[in-house]
Image 1 (cartoon, rainbow, N blue to C red):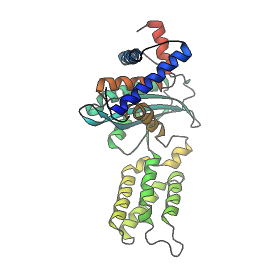
Image 2: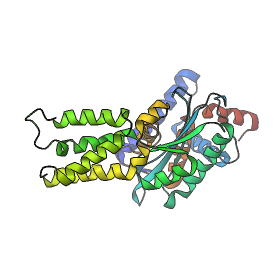
Image 3: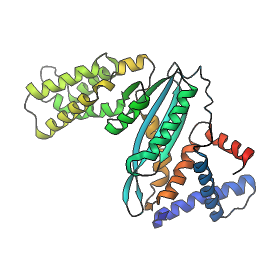
Image 4: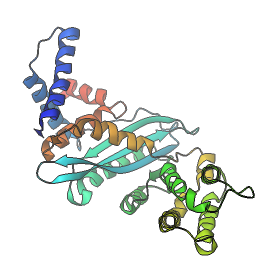
Amino acid sequence: MRLGEGAAGAERGRRITVQRDLREHHDREVSLALIQSLAAETAKVVMAREDRWTYTSLTPPDQAAVIALGYDGTCEQTCGEGWKQVMVGTMTLYDSGGEPLETLCQANAPEDGKATFLSRMDREVAALKNRYPDALSVGVSDGAADLRAELGKHCGQLILDFWHAAGYIVSAGQAMTVGAGAHGELTAAQWTDQALHRLKTEEGGAVGLLAEMERRLDNGPRLAKAERAELERAAGYFANNLDRMDYAAALRENLPIGSGITEAACKTIVKARLCGGGMRWHPGSMQQVLSLRALRRSSNRWDQFWTRIDRQGF
């Protein structure tokens, strides 16, 4: 890893925190270099055993009603190649009432075609489906076409992240209320609030809103260039994703409609660690950090890893 001056200070601060914890709580004086070396060696073991060691989800098979998959990408800076995309995947088990039970995470350093990441996710999803054969597999993501295609391989139902759709409603609000103010017409804020409620709770809400936006484009008052562009963008987004936007039915069936768990994983696994000021990463050291953080944030897996180490060694 190559660090700028500010990032080097942040990195040293993290290691000092570990050093202080070992001294104060375990009466161990450990050098910063040893802490860094131990982390790197542990990550190598995690990566080497990944496709050979089996981790068991602790949720009983009869309690998991839904397996929700989420794929997303977030950017960080590499040495020599600038900003590149790190892929993150989450697999969350839900009970029949829609309550999350446990989440598994994967994260992969930038690569051409995402082949390694997708292969790792394929293996994890297959293991979950084998353990929970009666659970419904649901894919939740934004509008990225490549993510939709990959989720479609595993999932019987696909859902567009509600908050991405909501953002297009907000951006269309001004165009949908041009000329309002007299005779009781809705303001942009009022139309937006009502549209979001319809989208989330009404059967066919997305279909109705798309039709309304298209009528505005074809027959409504003359729009400024920027307003028309926002409305066209929103209408296009709805048209491209309409089959994944039946939120009322999803909520009725206690299915997740948001990709917040996946986006949170992007922040906690990737952004919080890899994107300090001035940080640049080599692929090898980056994957080591990602593997450790993903394992640590996967329900029950960190303890299972160390149990295997205690029994079998490195």
